[in-house]
Length: 114
Ligand SMILES: CC(C)(COP(=O)(O)OP(=O)(O)OC[C@H]1O[C@@H](n2cnc3c(N)ncnc32)[C@H](O)[C@@H]1OP(=O)(O)O)[C@@H](O)C(=O)NCCC(=O)NCCS
Image 1 (cartoon, rainbow, N blue to C red):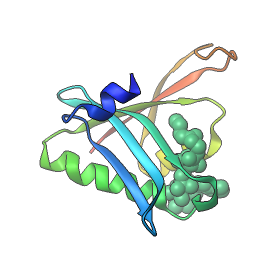
Image 2: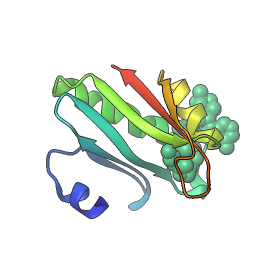
Image 3: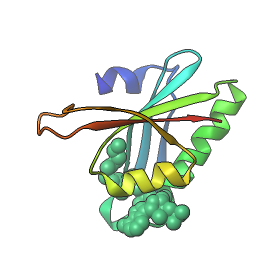
Image 4: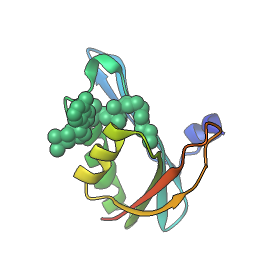
């Protein structure tokens, strides 16, 4: 699934390089008039330095050129830092999918209109 999305030219996928090495990435799925963020990750040694925010801001800049205004994503209820990140970018929690993951945790769905 992820490999297919990475190869799909309609999707916006962004990498953050430091000294030529990939330390952060953002992978998305283009659904026409909205986009789902499938993955965002930053190498543990490079976290809390604004790299994820930087990736999102580059992503929003690209969305604006494509007239796409709606972004949504799913996050585990206990992923504190990811929720900090999304809320600091203006995402709002839309609803919760109870017991969504195999470990019994719920998923929160967040959305943003840019
Ligand atoms: C979630 C993740 C992508 C954040 O990446 P990051 O580059 O560290 O995030 P940023 O430095 O851009 O921080 C964004 C906000 O989150 C908060 N934050 C992030 N990490 C934090 C930490 N360790 N301690 C306190 N706050 C933190 C900051 O408050 C920051 O907001 P601010 O700039 O207004 O203070 C990173 O922790 C990660 O890769 N986690 C594992 C993968 C994951 O959980 N992905 C999300 C799946 S839904």
